[in-house]
Image (cartoon, rainbow, N blue to C red; front, side, top):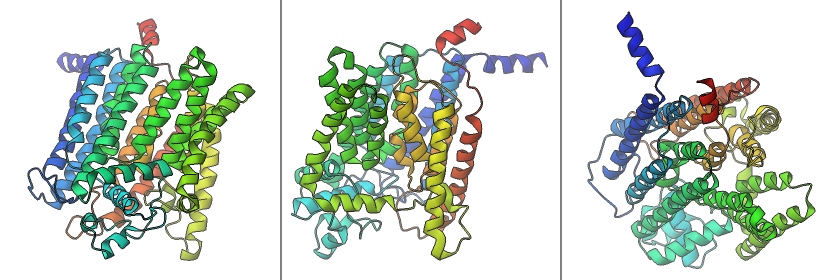
Length: 490
């Protein structure tokens, strides 16, 4: 018994052991990601006409298990590492940053996996190069014209115009112009851009927290070395990572505003406006930040002027169709939405109405609950709390949500103090991502036949369970978990 008790104390009392275990599990998740990518085209890796490494043609089951390993190991590893920080583990934040940037660099040059969205970006860029409006034209037009890039068009979104903002479409055009008539070249360049955006976000968050090593460690565990964010921002190369960079840069400018208040507030507004011009929901961050400055007319005017200077010209150049597509997108319902489960047996005629009513009502209620009980922000950046509250309410409860949308949430979570929300949001994202893997359709063979349909039901139920857990956990008082509190307890 004494030996068993000693072993339990050996594991439970040492923050360094928890942290070391967390890094090891994170490493396993990264290895699983790399294995998925290097095996060549599969149910997780789309064909692009190039970018082939081993061409092992893994089975559907092998691919699925590796994807599940990424999600399970990713969330668990970050959780263990954060627990290690709470128990006194103090790794070098610079080493965590360097390790995260090195992993990002390796994953950047591996084939895209887990999603075909990057191929859609390439097609929208190709449309723009050929003189078509991505907000109006659909990839099927390129297919009908026998365009060489369209040979590798994914089945999803073939009849859907670009739902992204004008700056995103502009980036797609520029990269497609450089990549020419090659899907492989365009997707490779796009993936490099998205990986650079992910790394840039890590550097910006590191700069915001430069004065506090404990907060730097937290930032790099929740963003830079977080396999869930690496999967979305680098491996899947979703454009949300670019918007996250612009949002983080805007927060940095705002954080440094005492050096030159008006110019930096103008820059803050412009950067947050640019983020919204990449993906419209990032406008929520700008609205929340403006709310924090409502008592200063000069600050509010500077933020608004900067945002208008970025958003208005972008949308004027893009045209009215871009706005129309954006509002149409807001009426959508995501497969992993938590409200699919409660309305599962509803009549078809009332499905959308019931779904949206539940979703937007829950969003409003969660916003109120978060505003009331979410942890207080750090003293040197109290404005981050309203941003987190508004963005979290939108992402957790709205009918329209995808796991990679959390690229807006995790930088804000990383800048907040530690709380029970860390684990809940980590495992919620892992569950949500499980509903989107392996990521390449069609699913023709077991175990993927009808896999997506069944998974959507189960994952939407899991999303509802996590949402309930978050609501239940918020009224509980949260303990301080910073280094000073740990030292005082000792």
